[in-house]
Image 1 (spheres, rainbow, N blue to C red):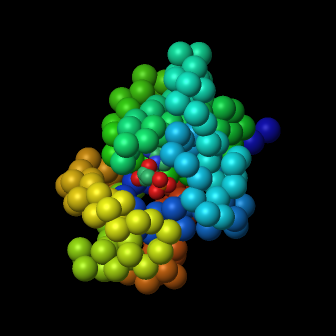
Image 2 (cartoon, rainbow, N blue to C red):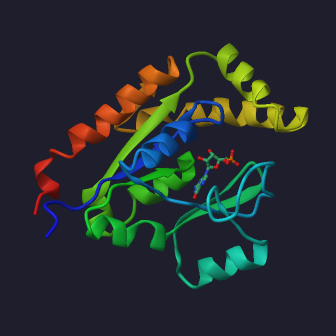
Image 3 (cartoon, protein in one colour):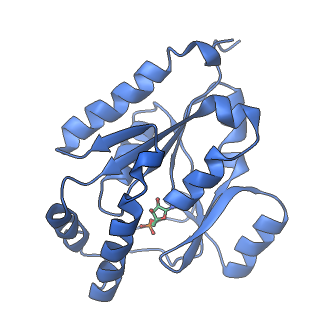
Length: 198
Ligand code: 5GP
């Protein structure tokens, strides 16, 4: 028998904040299951279907909403993104921690979710880039997106950053290692929480 139910670590932050790297590393180190989202955006070079995202057509995405398979969904940068219940619920019940990388709209939906299991599991973190200049440098440096895409992401990032006070935790990004240390400390501490112990 497992000793506790899982943590649902919800992570938001603008593109370029480093949140995806943090979430992925936690999963690579087998500390948590990474919830693979569905999206209608085209795959970037190097992205693999079923590993980075479930890449779906708009029709298929809509069909999954109608079938009640999604925990939350939102339109971000002109594309649809959503979390499959199957990526989250059973893991939590069996005591596996789940990390999800979702935008501020999706976070609002998960926070408002009536499911008691989700509410017990949930902690939310906003990853903030160190400065606007550094954010622009990071968005440009990735080299995978066109200039107009970067400009749109920068504009959206500034809007997205205004939502950080809604989160329980905020991580102000510094170096990769410092960020990861803080990130992992959060989940280590949450594993001691009495309300999730069986
Ligand atoms: P990208 O296209 O750069 O991978 O992701 C764009 C944005 O979509 C990021 O802010 C990311 O957190 C968000 N996102 C990724 N998956 C989901 C999801 O399942 N639901 C929601 N609401 N947002 C997501």
